[in-house]
Length: 549
Image (cartoon, rainbow, N blue to C red):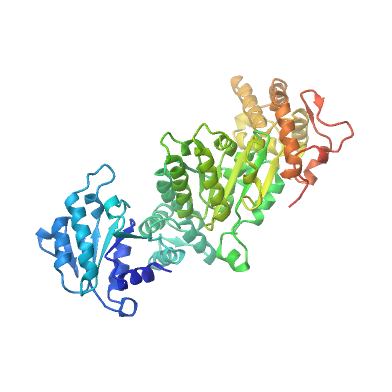
């Protein structure tokens, strides 16, 4: 049931007091004013009044006497008015307490008395409280009916975008290069904003870019940052890394590329649901977080990071509220990507009673939402210690797939060296005669067997410092020297890596495709000893099922 039909039913049923929580005051008033004159929907047309403490009652944009600006006098006017009417009272919540305000008992009593008068009145009269805050005193909880007023629909926002395009299309200083699909992406990116916020975002794009195109999404996402910052538990992550900045992990890349555009209407018409999410587990420092960040730039969707540490606070009951607030915000600005980093740390206390069951309740709320969510919120969770995660989180329905990210193969190490060296050797002084060719990359990859991606990045940085300190360009010997002095994680945490691999062998899909494992048929040496028997095939011990996408 839509908002207008719901309100029409309440008006016809003589509900005395209705409460609508929204920031979009003018949009609600416009809809209610039209509804008040609709004989088809409410049977008896009614006079429409708005009231505020600064203007008093206004009928047909004409202000009433100053005396009616006080809340008690306003309620008296409603009581004595004899004709069918709808009264919209703006920001009346300030007189009802809440948010460190003291309620006026005489006003609360007056509202309760008025409730009986309105129900028995010969002429139908309804009062609508309209405010951005949903505070209802305990004394009035049985008298007020709360009505949900949703944010603008996709069609509402698309109409605003179309009007802006039509108005500016003839302007020679503005360039508009939007295809129909680009318009859909732009309008859907603005979902979760009010109409005014969406219009501001589009206007900002026109001013800063001199037109509208697919890159105008940045202006829309900038506007959404304001909503995200106010939650206190969500962080907006700027999507700087691209999927091309990720070395290897082609199975994940292919999976993601196939699901690009999956949140558009064309996918729904094709019969496809929006993907639920991914769980990435594996060896620390091998690209899980980088993948999470790069999805945003690939799909042109905002990336929100959920900090599980901020969910849990010291006040009893507030942790569940914090999570619900974060979920509501993510759904409001959907389609979006919700990243839960190191999820195992946030759910580590669900089996203990030390927190009075708070962790279990938070976990239950998260599980229920992940299973039942209908809004296009793509959840990507990363975990290093997958064994500590509860089995309920891992069953089908929570995530579409679980990928295991292992130590990079030789081909992947070559890709990682190529990415970091190409990104940093942009200055002729730093590059000199250094050649990033197949032979050099192969040499470096051979010397960094069992090194993780994060260690390879730091090797490139440290080698550049060596060259910079001597005021010369980079050489292969600089890289060899740093590699020789680096003790990889695979040696310091060999047992933990072995356990992760054993767990993932039958429970996850390998992030690295079969074709990238050439020359990697046996597990690399860890801590000076083979992790597998000399002739043992890697697929039987190396984590991750050998599925290719």
